[in-house]
Image (cartoon, one colour):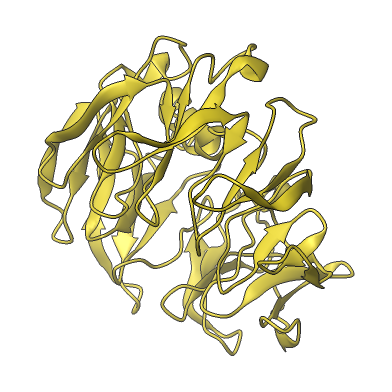
Length: 332
C-alpha cells in the first residue's frame, strides 16, 4: 500500500507500454527453476508477470493472457491489462493497455478458464484476499484522485463494505490498509471486515500484514498498531516473507526475523524477499533506487550464498510455484 490504489502496477505497466525493458540486444524474459535452468523462454516482444496459483500473465502484441507451468496458453491473450490470480480470480480489463489510465476504463474478474465471473464494472479493482476485494468507483486514476471512493466486494461482485474510503488495499490476516480521504498527503490505518478502523490512520504508507507484521513508514507494526521493529524497511515492498524481512541497518541491508533479530547480513547492494527459500539479490550495478537496471541479479539462499549466479538484468522476481521470472539483457 503506497498511498494510491494503482501505483503498484506503474513500473510493470510502463515497461509494457514503452518497451523500456527491451534494448537493441534483443532482451527477453524467461522462467528459471531453482537450479538456474531455463524452463520457459519468451519471445523478445513479450512481457510477463510471476506465476501465481499455477498461472502466469504473458503479453503478446500488447494483449495479455495466462500460461501454465508448461508454458502453454490456457487463457488466450485478449486483455489490455491483468493482475495475478488470487483465490481463483484475476483482475482484467478488455480495454487496450494504453487506456489503462482513462477514467472510463472498467475492470472485472475472470476465473482460470478466462470466463468473466464479475464483469467489468469498476474504475479500478484489486485482488481477492480473505474472501474480499477492494474496488474503486469514480475518478480512480489521474488528476481527480481526491474524488475516488474505495469499497470491498465479495465473489459475487456485491458490496460488503460500501465505497466510502479514499484508499484501500486487500485484506490480509483480517485487516486491510485504508484511508478516509484520497490524495498525496492522506494518512493510512487499518480496518477490519466490519469496516471499522482498528488501527487509526497515522501512517504515510503501510503494506499488508504478513507473519503478523506490517511494514510502514514508522517501522513494522503488529495487529494493535504498535511498532515492534523500529527499523526502516529496505524498500516499500519489504514485507515479511517466510519469517524474514529486509531492513536497513545504517547503510547496509540485513534480514531480520519477526522479533527484529538480524539473521543474515548479505553482502549485496539490493535484495528481494525470500520465497521458496531463495531471494533475488544483486551485489552491485543494480540500478537507481535498487530497481535493477544493471545486469547483475541472481539468487541467494538463507546463508547468503549465491546458488544462482548474478547474470540477469532488471530486478528478478521471487520464486513462485517453483519458477522465477528473470530477464536477459533488460535494463529497467
